[in-house]
Figure 1: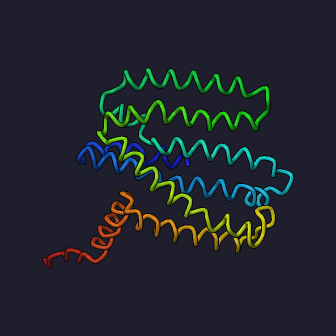
Figure 2: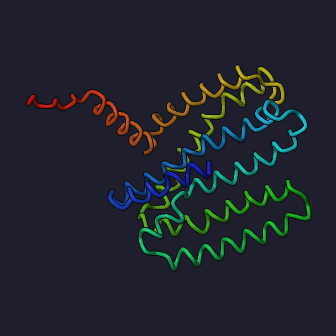
Figure 3: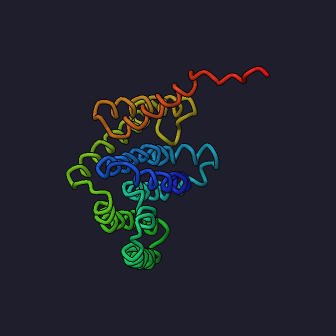
Length: 232
């Protein structure tokens, strides 16, 4: 997931420069729905580790879950580095980066004596601090209101829960995560994807308009007749 964000964030940051400020703000907030994928990895942590590496590695599952929770925080403010660079706000970015990095190192130093579990938890704490530092910074540059921010975060959280709810229900009703098979995991994932789209539609999430627009563009490109070469 960090690699995915690294790939798409610069493109979306550039895109934000050529769209109206309010719409650009809502677009970057729409990235919060990537939280569904991150939450999916967190919910699948135990069965995937068990299937791929065996029961000896199951102690790593809680670590992965805490790391996933921290990634949810980073996804909530995905353009924290790219937009300031594109909009020539380097001084503000450097100042905030120094503060955030110092806090990150301090949290790891405080948590390390208590084991890897606490280090993973410290990453989630750092994610919350990340939001507190960078969300106001991005808000000033993109021009969205706090009300819009909270509304879109609520929509994204609803979509995220819908994406993982079938898997969580299957753990409770069919087999627990330590015994779940590929069929159970696959059906739960597919149902979650469907519910994710349903919630996007019901809540009128801004990302839905972007998705449908992309699909319409692809459809138009597919049915557009190819130019014929004139005969010599």
